[in-house]
Image (cartoon, rainbow, N blue to C red; front, side, top):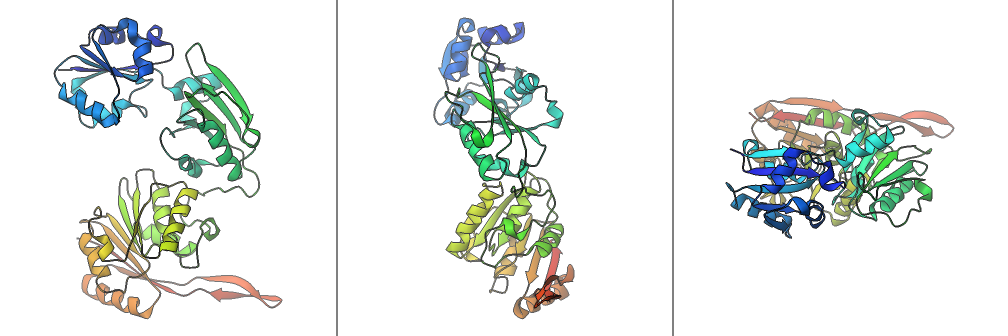
Length: 401
């Protein structure tokens, strides 16, 4: 039996609601919502109006505590498109809800611009780092990005310019669906809009200048895209390593001895559901990992500054582990294998004879697969060109029973 109604409401207020949504509001004992939503719906509210508490989780707890009473929650647009509906559904079964969606900001923006939504990337940057847009900056892409406030569009234009996409068109759509609706466009590098409504969404037509920082969709990003001190898994080996790690939806990676963070970063770039924990003892390298993660659009990469195996204690159990540095240190390999979930994958790359010997021993006892990776790159030798080999890698891949 449903006791909770979630009503999407737009800037047009009650005029944009159907009869069922209106009845859900007027029939509720308590109506929760933001101050703006409660004001828009005020003529229909007959029960108690409660504005969202801070922290927001306190309001969620209050709603759950009222289970069984007639409760209504007001949401912006579509409650299940980057909205409060998704938050509530984590704790309340869908059979206990009635949901009345309104067109989302993304839908309204697409309608104003004539952009087919199925061909557009919809991205919420509300309360989230703007760096999340970086992996999606490809020539010809169309992006709808919901921002946090009036300053979001200016900051977004600055990011585009810094990354080499300064001639992209940024269209700011404000207060969509209401009497104050406004649509304005500027070139990112000359962005100068003022008095922007805090309720805005940005439509970006991406244009790449020569040298723009484009993050390819394949594994094995150019080494130059990472800040590093030479201690990193190089491009060709990294591509093979990501293939062996075989990321799957929703999984967590431990990148032990992360160096520049390149493997964990590329793991997260493979799918938005993936998470990674970089473990790195060197503070300078740890700082580089943070900067690289932001520059590559995965600012949520978790960083642990410490030495394995001690630094592994208390971390979320991994679905995959990569050991690229420090693997020969006592206890590291065994601790990683013990923490790995059943069916999880471990990949260790050895450059030193000490770690290679350890991997050969584990392979002899536990199985898995061994690969020898040798890469050579063409380089100048005087006025001529010759192959300059990189240090060979012994790679052990193992799946936990």
